[in-house]
Image 1: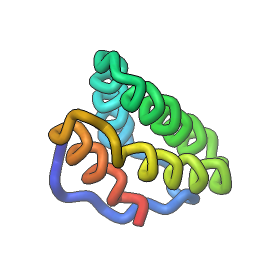
Image 2: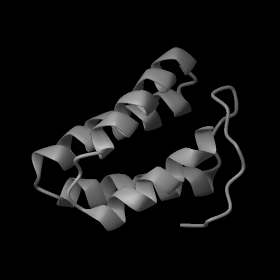
Image 3: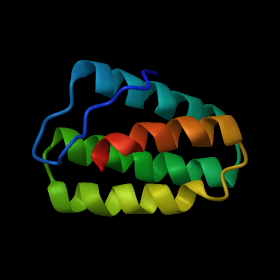
Image 4: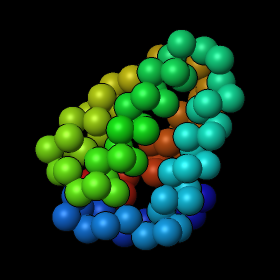
Length: 90
């Protein structure tokens, strides 16, 4: 994943590169059997859906829920990469 992101707004559709990065993170979360990863996967999947479908209120809610559910994620490396990806929405 690239360390250089442009700020993303809910009104801007995702680029294919951004979707590819997000999909890769979702795949990795799906491989983690922990309940914490399952919860992050649920919320981050919502981020993808609502971003692509341009549903800004739902996107904002799922971004918040994803950030909150990341705290107890047992995989620190994956947590860092997801947190880095989410910075494009600031």
